Image (cartoon, rainbow, N blue to C red; front, side):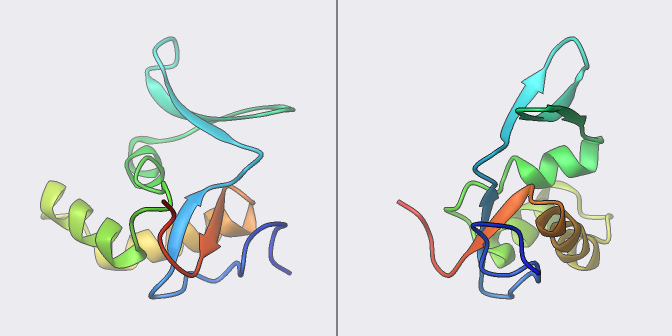
Length: 103
């Protein structure tokens, strides 16, 4: 079952992910990391997760995110790892998938 507000927990090849409505992504200086804040607490993200989620703003497609990360990190296995991470993030409700870009 998909989290509320998402079209699917799967990562559609032509989908536009954005951070879920119950979460706020921000850089936390004290943690020296990107974090997801939500009403019950906080998730401290590793560097890779932060790089991926900060691009999940509803204006970039999965393909756009992968292309940006391949440019930024040419030796990383981005094409496989980004969709896998976003599937996990959708299952946790961290992101929501949309059929098209948001304004």
